Length: 349
Image (cartoon, rainbow, N blue to C red):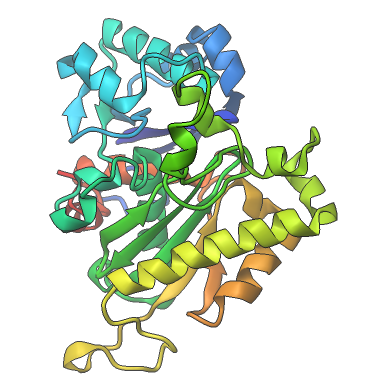
C-alpha cells in the first residue's frame, strides 16, 4: 500500500509518502519526504506531478484540497469543486498552484482524493457553522489526524479517547481546532481567528466594507505579524519585536480558550475524571512552521499551560510539514489500513 499526502501551504507544497506491507508486521517505508516552494509550483506545476509519477504505482494521493470539499475522487471533480476548494479570482501563488496541479492530475488519471475541511464534518454541530466558512481547511483536518495518532500512541489510549485543542501556526495562517473523543467538534480557521505571520486572521466587517478598492482574496494574505512590524522580516526575527509577540500570544490564547467552551467538560489536569468515571486526557498540541522557533513555542506554552498540558506534535517526516504526514495517515486509513478506525471515527467519509 503506497500513499502520498500533500500539504499545499502558503510558503511551500510539502509531500510525504509511505509504503506499508499489509499483514507483515513491518514498519512502513518512507518513499517521499520533500518540500517545494509554492511559487515554484505556481511557475511550473509539472515539478510536483513529476515527483509523484516517479513513485508510480500509487494507491492514493491525498490532497491538495484547499478549503476542502466532502470526500471525493478527482475523476469526479467539477469546476464548481475547484471553486469551493480555492477562490478562482486570485493570483495568490498557493491557490494558482493548486488549481494547475489539480487540472493536470485529473488529466493524467492520478489516484487523487479530496478530503473535507472542518465545516464539512458532521461531528461539528450545525449551529456552530452559522455565519462561518473557514473553520479550518482540509490540511488542518489532516494535522488533526496526525495529532490523534500521536496522542493515542504516546498516551496509550484508543483513537476515540483522544482529546485536545490543536494549534497550527503556519507561515501564513494560524488555526485552532477542538477535538473531543477523536472527533473534531469546532474550529477557528486561519481567515477567521488569530492573526498569522502573513495573514490578518479574523477581519472586522466594519473594516472590510471601508476598504478601497473592494475586497479580493488577496487581503487574507496581508495584515499579519509581518505587516504589524512593518519590516521585511522572517518568523525568526519576531524575537526582536515584543508587541508583535504579545499580539500573537493573546490572539492564540483567546482562540484556545474559546475552543474549551465547545468541549463542554474540559479535563484538566489529567487526573480528573470525565463523565461516567472515564479518564479523558486533554492537551494543547502545537504544530506548524512557527513552532520550529523555540521562543515562539515557549511563549505559547507559557500562556496555554494553565488550561492543559502543552506538547509539540511529533512528525513522521524529517522535511515535510505536519499536514502532509496527517494526509498520508488519512490515506492509509481510507485504504483500510491500521488507521481505518481513526479515519472512520473522525468522520472523513
